[in-house]
Length: 367
Image 1 (cartoon, rainbow, N blue to C red):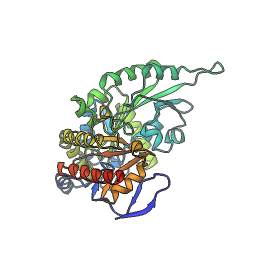
Image 2: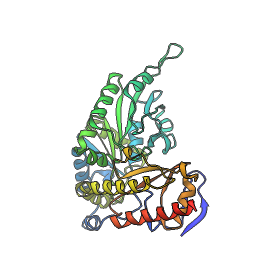
Image 3: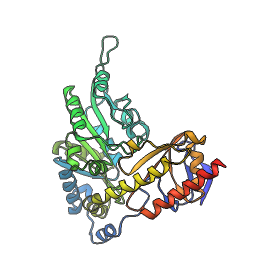
Image 4: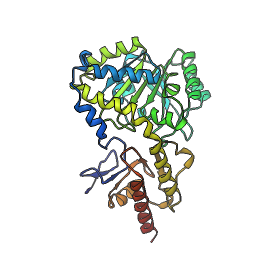
């Protein structure tokens, strides 16, 4: 089932096949039957030539939900991030982002490599929220009589490394005003912004519309097989559409198949996220009561959460191997922290199964 080898950089358990109980990420699970049915009904066109009405419908739907004029369907949310950075005027400027954000840690510094900008890291609180006063101080930092220009402030909602934590609309509006005060743009990495909206009980546009540009994921909590959507003004999206053509990011052959599943995702799966949050809370609460594991329950707000193994004396990778022997997959974040993600494919019985596995493993450690 598992290999004894471990990837050097990612430091994850190397599975030969997906684990029977996979709580590593939301993206490893199959689309729902309703998505498959929607895909089967589609006669796909060419999205790159804007000849597919299903793609047009998806883009219009997501633009409306995020409070934007226009949207562009792309293979991944990372494509949306890259295109937004490249199309904005960021060369020789700084991009402010939270020090543990996905854009900085996971994407191999594409900020500087592709847009010519320099990341300016500001450490946020345990929820991943940067203090606006600290952000403004960083923007105004001066040395040798010179202040580097700042072109963009980036937010992540929900914040992955902090455990699926949420930024509310008031905070986002404040950061938007701060960005505009300094002639910068606000970009929202909203891969899981639907989860944030459900957790707060507000429409998605409450969290997305204050940003100049927002990218959302269709294949994380929403469960579609593929896709991200970049939303912004009509003018910005038209420019990005041309850039996406030049870089090959828009050439999704038979795109209507995936767009059909995406429509089901945003219309139907959105309303099931509350169950994912409930199950995550249940699992996190059980783990928090086990000797050797620590969970800050204040940060368990949506469908994923982080767990510390420091008190057990085991590294997160050691523990990942132990639970893997029982068929459970978890995602190592840091030497002594791991993450688990809940989604539509994980039911209450599987949550209880995961609890039982941890109880057994932690009991074996104490012997």
